[in-house]
Length: 269
Ligand code: 1GP
Image (cartoon, rainbow, N blue to C red; front, side):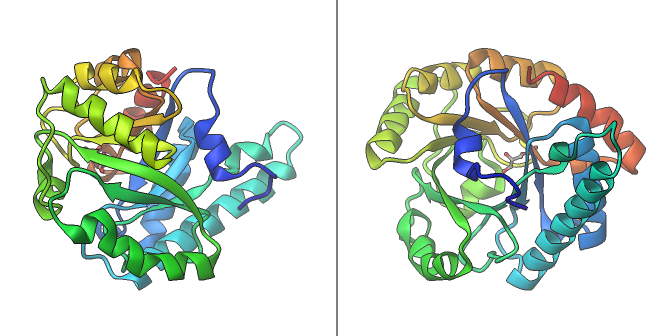
């Protein structure tokens, strides 16, 4: 993609017009072709970024094939829209961003990567180890890094377990405030509050509110957001970006995916 001059980070940091939505596609959960079809429905519904990643053990060839399939589908839709005077081809100019579980899950076909420190991990690998392994590849690929502080909140799910995170508890607003300050002091651009994919409760809005008091960070929230009301609560509390993944995988077909996703994305604004 990259058909405009705007960097992905500039788009992520742009303010105004309410919160925006990210669709997370886990390459382990479907074929690249189905991933591309799901991503196209999400873009039709108004999603602003496609994240590719999630599972911790997906090999890079699967991640790459998924990124390529999504990029090709976006290019086709953009071309088709450019031939139709009533369509806006820029609607399809949606960045594909790696959301990696480690240095193995990289692809040169992505536009950018959430270059993350799992800030509350107790394990060196997730604080800096995987990042050091991955940095030379990202540099060589020319994929834009989005410096991201990633904080796992209870219940935390699999990422909390694999990342050996000291989970931020729902009432620990001082901890989340300290993480947000720390992310800012490191110079990160994004702070991602994660409850864990498929979590039965999303991040407590009180944590989002407190993190919001630290300026200069784009605030992403994800994990367990299943209904438009969940999204509205997170946005009211101060989320700039809403990430959903599981609802995309759960839908039986593309029609039901659209029915499920559209109200979630509308609830962002
Ligand atoms: C996971 O926050 C994302 O990293 C999305 O979570 O799968 O629960 O939507 P869900």
